[in-house]
Image (tube, rainbow, N blue to C red):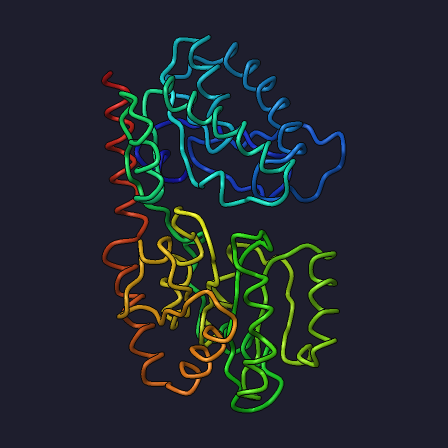
Length: 362
């Protein structure tokens, strides 16, 4: 939204009834009702999201009746809503694709639901005026559909533009460490299967046995998910080496990342670029990642240490990186440099401008 308003567009952002409200010049944040008093909506397709999508469609219809929108821009499953509204009110439509539907595989019912969603996504691609794919893999998926719709590769940017102060970083680090000389390994993300959390928690006991100076900081997860993982770690006598922080606000997250020594991404599937990697690069800290295609979209050996997505190999690689401070510093500096020169807000805004100019000139 900030990029579009800075480009001179007036924007109405219609979204869920949760999250932090911010004010934008030439922009409004409009939230649908929350009759169920929901405080959290899980990542990925779900019945709860369908419920809110119905509310978004209804509210979108009312907004379109009052306002003459030139472009309706829908993200993920809201893409089909954008297409429907654009067709009714003679506007242009953009579908922004952030994920691979089959990254969320888990059980027969969910897989069936995802297969249905994949068909809806195909219809959205066919009917919209342009697609934004946040990674090359996602753009490739769109291009394989063999429609005439143009796909733009516009990379994500870090979840926050905030730059933490040295004082705040030091304060956070002092809060996180329990003893002198600890190495902080931080993971950020949901506990969805594709994120590799089971792999990470399987590796943690071995890492702790190999190196008692390593402390894991886990950011994300619901209360129930955290309780489950705590119980498993306690059984394996590794719970005292792990700190769970739950969800952290985007503008506070950079403080925790910058206070860490190693930033971990154990993802096991999907072709979409992990947003967390951009946050990790911005923090200027070393990155430990599984050697899967989605990580290779942004990272190489200069910016990360890779390990096969197997618990013992991940544990060994983490232990080695924890013991090599010089390598950690070099990789952190390389990632920060890449953020400043390529994956930054100014470049993102420029690419978004190109997409909007294309659509408006159709």
